[in-house]
Length: 420
Ligand code: ADE
Image (cartoon, rainbow, N blue to C red; front, top):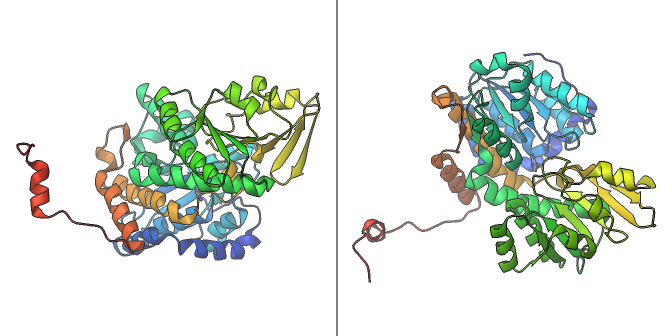
């Protein structure tokens, strides 16, 4: 493995170490797995390439993988999500080849991915599928040697399923996102809270009474809408899927097309996974002061080139807020350059929810070491036992006891003859 790194400033390592230690206190499941991995070494000698948001939580996952005996290299999964102090600690405190600088341009982003590929990973751990895709696209010779991969996010899983459908997937991948202990918590409560956090840090606006539009009512959208409502905002949902739109309506939200919401709203959050959700026709009718941000994985949900083309001027008015002045005098504010607002303008999901997501990642890595070679080149579910184990460990860490069915109750559930 190459031992070089590209981080902003290694002198930030001490500050990063303190924050990582602090986050670890909120990651009891990962801590328990770290102790097990230290003892059993399930990843002994395995090379893992991770393309993840470089945060305090990710650093704690890297510690566990190393404790399990893995050789790890890390790069960023988004140009604007890296916490430079964490990258510095990974590089100099944990001794992990780390390639991540907050604000890196697209070329550097892909150079960093290539640096991780240079260590010849046997397992890829992705958030958005860029590492796996680059291996398929540029290094197909590596595919046969791979044990497998795992994918953290909805967008990445959608890309993987498209590859699978076309027969283009060259090694097995586990869709960590689809574990219940992942998406029901991380996507809903994690994205819900951290998106509001990002908006508030970027703008310091009061949400109470504000007209708040959420485009997309998947698990992330549900979380954002729920939390915005909790802050007193009046929330409208835009959805293209009739079932989700119906659910939003019965959850008590206004439901309307984006064209209508554009005139109505004051804050807009895209979280659909699709492109050009907010575009020229919407910018044309938004009110003065409208705030635009994205919580989806890629920065394609808001048509920023169109916004730029329409604007007569553009300036940064706060660290993560850019003002676009329209020819008629209206000002639109874009947060976090249209990238994931929760990671660009805040710190991503809190550690206690990443605890479950990353426990799944750690256990899936061990699963791939054990079973990877026997799995088909498909997108696989997280094994039910792993999902259940993560839930059990989290409940125990939260000091919550639950009931056990009596033998009579167990019997009743399998007795199809017992009716009225
Ligand atoms: N995705 C969302 N929040 C995150 C976090 N805190 N760390 C890593 N990935 C994330």
